Structures are given as structure tokens and as C-alpha cells.
Length: 137
Ligand SMILES: C[S@@+](CC[C@H](N)C(=O)[O-])C[C@H]1O[C@@H](n2cnc3c(N)ncnc32)[C@H](O)[C@@H]1O
Image (cartoon, rainbow, N blue to C red; front, side, top):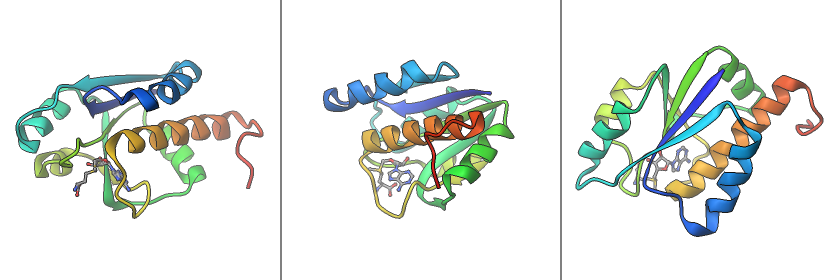
């Protein structure tokens, strides 16, 4: 299983440490950052250029799932790319070209916060797959 996160811009200083924490634990994961563009349509094209394999766009209007469902979902796809929109959100083209729209909750999250929530859920899913006590329910 290989996972790529494609996002707009560098993560803010206050969240960088959290990102590093999960990157060190998840060797199966890489983050590709594209430069902020003038419009979200241009940004969408740059994000899609970096997407590979099964494409999941993060969108509060997408489908929610439990952490266990997310773990099974990850296991089904050998290469998965998660796309996170910038401050203006995702273009229609990204929504149309993605295989799946995933919601992390009904809240609108700042895009760097969405990145950290996604990282923790990927780590949690990895622990569920490995059967460690990290996830208890
Ligand atoms: C600040 S939000 C964009 C809000 C924008 N007004 C919209 O309607 O899409 C930036 C990005 O963070 C991600 N995001 C924010 N909240 C989310 C949520 N609840 N579930 C999934 N992704 C979310 C999405 O990729 C979104 O494009």
C-alpha cells in the first residue's frame, strides 16, 4: 500500500511538527505540495497532475466513514492519492476526476488542519490493519 497526499502550499509552522510526527511513523506515505495558484481551477489542474492511482478528494460534502471502514478502504487500493483543496476549496474538475469524495466531518476545516486529521486517520488505519492497541472501540 502506497499513499500520497497532494495539497496546496507548505503546512503552517504551528502544524509542521505534527506532520513530521506522522510522516516518521508512516513510511508508506509521501506528501506532494503544489504552489498556490491565482484561481482554484488552476490549482485543481496542478493538484490533478500530481495524482496517481485511485484518487480521493477531501470534501466536506463527500461520504463519511468510520476508522475501521477507512482501514478496509485503504487496503483495497495499492496506490491511493488524497487531494486536499486550498483556502478556496476544490475545483469542479477535481471533484469530477476523483474516484471518491471523502468527508472528514460536516465541519469546514482549515486546509492544514484537514491535512493533520487525515494523517492521524491514516496512522490509525495502519494500526488497525496491524492489530495494535492504538485503536480501541
Ligand atoms: C477551507 S476548506 C475549503 C472550503 C471551501 N469553501 C469549500 O467549500 O470547499 C479547504 C479544503 O480542506 C478540505 N476540507 C475542509 N474541511 C473538510 C471536511 N470536513 N472534510 C473533508 N475535507 C475537508 C477540503 O479539501 C477543502 O477543499
